[in-house]
Length: 482
Image (tube, rainbow, N blue to C red; front, side, top):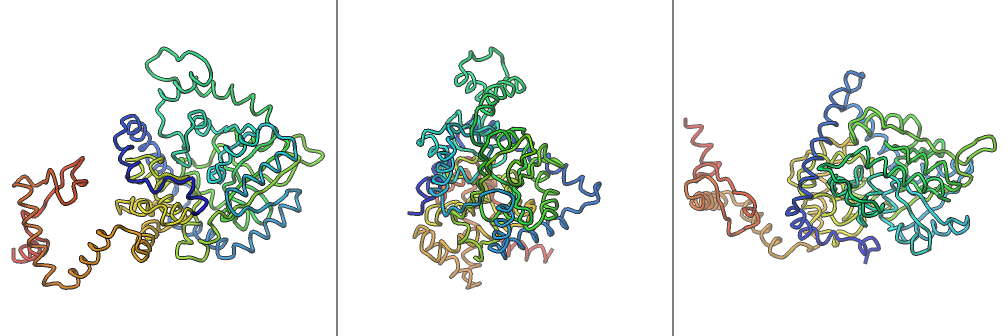
């Protein structure tokens, strides 16, 4: 079995989705968050012309930058490695999550590390690094507020930008009261500033006592050997400058050629992610602390990870590697905001996860994810690097059919449909029968309350029937006569 698949629950998507849809607390949290994400992004994009910028032109430029890096990925990675080493950093390579854990634990043991503070890294989620560190006797502490919350709750992130978006304020307050050992406040609504101060007070002690910091990187800049880290909380800088050892764990696809390329990508990354013109903290981390510098690590290690990415390079699905992890696709996806991220069963949720998870864990281990789409195409229309997500999901569905991975009934139905659709006279006759049958089921009300052939369609809603029992061809012909 694929190593990633051992930790994946993506094969249970349908059952997990049904459970999440029926969770009223989750639905409350999701519906409250949805307009915040989409609304802020819309305002940020609408303001682009005021800054003399054009969204479509920027998208084209950003997609071109990512393609340039991916088309010569080995070259840019070698340039990055050379420049990072020249500035005092070590560069290590990991094939998969197991090697990530082995390398990090080896670095930690060689430097006598007992506690690690972390700033969000999706690669560490792929590797289940926290579990490996704890098993090795090293305490991992997540310091992004959302990541800290879900670490206390013993859960996985449900969103790549807002990992605790599935939690209500009341749930967070109860969790803090339990884990921080204090009585829960007797008030009707949680006090956000108070909860934030409480988390800051707890985390500050960890910042000051950690031996090693672990972060991800939004981008690796080849020409300078730099890791670029974009955050909205000061914890990222605490993690990367206070401990004596800093380890950066990131995927090989994150490399970009130049600082100018990075600056161009930053025109759209924060706007797409959080609706900001610029994030609160943009850190460019290069090398180790010099003798005349008062802060920064004395040891910097980059761990560049494959974990399925190399197989995607040069394939039909290479476009997904352009992804800059802004989260815009899931923020506009009706499926994601009906289910939340945990339904997807692995590290990456939403439309991006519906492509990445089958590619990284094996398509046979995530059969339903490429089908987790309404076909509305909002994901591709908002993607800042023009990833054709619907086309990639369609390609995965076609591959499932070719390999015989879908249920036999579905495969038979599609073949029968293709055979009928290729015979116009038969097709029109059968659609006339179907239209009249559906109209009969609607019983003159214009909607079907229970559809026996596919009951899932009417479990939570009525199925509308248009045309009064007439097919599209019949209605069109009548309109031309009129």
